[in-house]
Length: 151
Image (cartoon, rainbow, N blue to C red; front, side, top):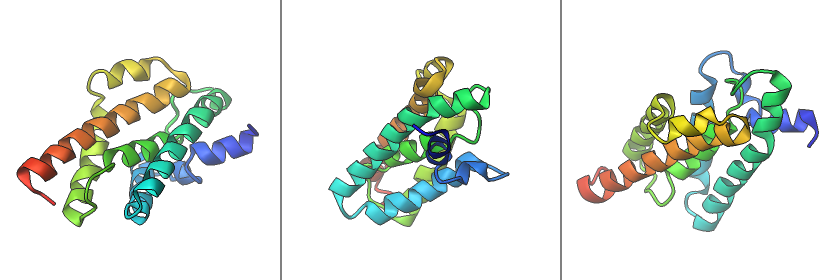
């Protein structure tokens, strides 16, 4: 893939170039996308798969170009993780706020096996820790919505 196109995708449309908290900015932007497509399950799943596939296709290439391991401006992994976080979850304001902060916490603290995935490097390492953070978030939200009733 062309390096400029790969960087555009890996930075989630240059959101990763924000000077402050690019991961949180990308997570918030992806949450807006998730909210927009949520009424159509097929579209939600398609967008989630698209973000994930694009991440695997571009993250390693852009990491190599940067010369740094998992540079902070690669944020397509956050977009993919957010889509996983809210899969089959009601998109109410309390749930969205809770899920956003849960995802960011799981992404930062890298609970096993996310920490092992990150150590692998390349696209796999960049993407899989956020995929795991999304899975952890989705599990907690499923319990919170279905058992506790936060929706």
